[in-house]
Image (cartoon, rainbow, N blue to C red; front, side, top):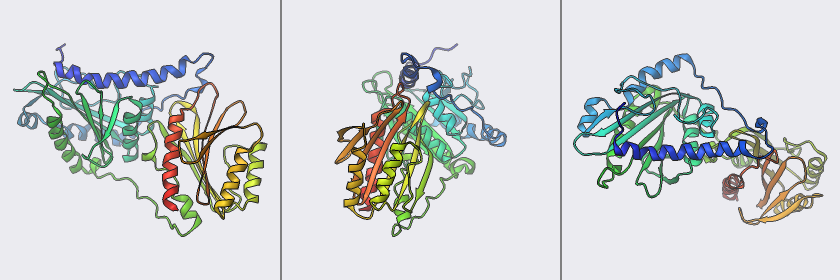
Amino acid sequence: MPRRPVLRRTIGVLAAAALIATGATATSFRALPGTSLAGVAQAASPTAPATLLAHMRIVLPSLVLTGGEARKLDFVIDSNAYDNKYPPDARATFRTPLPGQTSNSPMMSEFFAGGFVLGKAENLVGHVRPGNVSVVVWAFRGPEGAFRGLRALRDLSGLHTAASPFAPGAILLSLPGTGVSDLIWVRGRALVRASAGKAPGGRSMAHDRDLVARVVDAKIDSEPSVGAVALPPAPRLDLSTLAGRLGSLRVAENDLPGGLDTRSWRLRARPDARDPLRGDAAAARLNRRYRALGLMGGSAQVISVAQIHGHYAAYAWAFPSAAAARAALRAAESQRGVRVTPAPVVRAGLRVVRPGRSLLDDLFWVRGSVLLQVGGYGPPDIPLLESRQALVARALDAKASALR
């Protein structure tokens, strides 16, 4: 088997870091003392519609560089670690989106849950000048899944992330100190990663990577079955109505951290709004208190967490005045048996942890006449990350603050 060029081995550092990071995450769930695998969800099956799969087998190989296009950029096509064809096969594709990871790793789970269909990889090695660039194109059922894969790569790899102007939502992932970076973007149903590092002698390959990325992006954009697949239009909301204002508080999928996904969304623009997750006596008492304060309606966004049988929930409770909303906050923090601490995650936020067999951890705060709440709920021995809860809270707070 041919030995990989030096730069190709260097670019592998990024992939290895991602695998180590996600593998460590999965291991940490399994290694908790006394924890059974009942608290860890299994990955979705990598199924795809047969007609779409067959079409992608034809289309994807045409979206990367041909031999002639590679030579114009001073590259030759070499073997890659995704399809493992030696010598390289221009028609080869792959069904396992992230080689080296187990099917139940958090990142692999996100790719399958997002509707991964098929992938194509290409490794370009410098012909005259040393160095190489690698490209991976993952095809999903739709753009929503492609963006879900991007969020997984961004937030579950443990790598440094920066925004890129290359395309809407594009990012740069890097491993500090290596000079290696990945340009990642979404075009239609395709999630694309172009990787480059320093060639022998220290020359950066970022410019060469961007040239290759532009060629690939243009090919994807010109293929209707891939580049022309658009996100569904966002619903138009009438912000003059209570339903419209509450509807605007839903945190969009692309604003959620990687590994999180909306499981359900409920909106009630009437005073019988209640917490859909709990029917216990304490929740019933709090709901009665909210109604006594003039509750006008509410919304609830339940957010699932990759591989954990737990979830977050983002609530908005609308009241007739700011004074009523503040009184509702006092009612929430005065529940019997709760532990209350300041939560600087958002301005004037409070963390309210309720007693019970499960983790019941809520952030509460008020913006205008709306009481906002972001909770983390799950088994006590598989804690949900407060950092992700904070990200959801900040996203909800930004939307609520914009309504004032």
